[in-house]
Image (cartoon, rainbow, N blue to C red; front, side):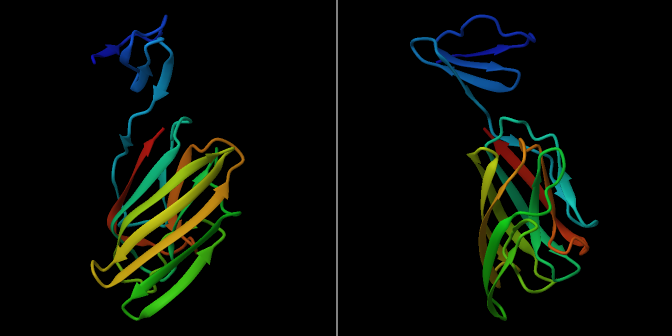
Length: 195
C-alpha cells in the first residue's frame, strides 16, 4: 500500500484505495473508495512541573477522543492531591466524580474529588509520582478517566478513576492540585492525544 501526501489547502475528489495523508490527518479508503478519517497520535511538548500551581495544555483539536497525561517525577510542596481538570472554552472546576486509592509506605487510603479528575492520592508532599492518566470520550461531551501511578519509585502504588460531562467540545486541560494553591516543585508532564 502506498502513501500520498497532499500539500495544498483543498482536498478535491475521492482518494484512491490506500492511505491518504492530508494536513496531518490520515484518511483510509476501502475498495469502494469510501473515505474514513483516522487521526495520528500527537505528542505535545513536555513542560517542567517545577513551579506554579497549574500547568495548562490548550488548543486541543476537536477531533480528539483520547488524551494520555504523563507524569514523570512530579511532586508538590504540599499534601493536596494532584488532579486534572478539563475545559471547553474555559476550565471546568466542578461536577467531577473521581476517586483514587493508594497503598504502601505508611498504609493505604482512598480519596476523591469533585473539582477534577484526581490522580493516585499519595499522602505526603515529598512523594514523587510517575505514571499515566488516560481520559477517553464516551460521546456527548462525556469523558471518563483511569489512572495508574507509582510514588517514590517503589514505595507507593495507586490508581484512580472518574468522569465528567462538559458543556461543549473539549479544547483544553489543566494539571493542578485539589486545593489549587500547592506549588509544583519537581518533575515534568506531557500529554499525547489521538482521534
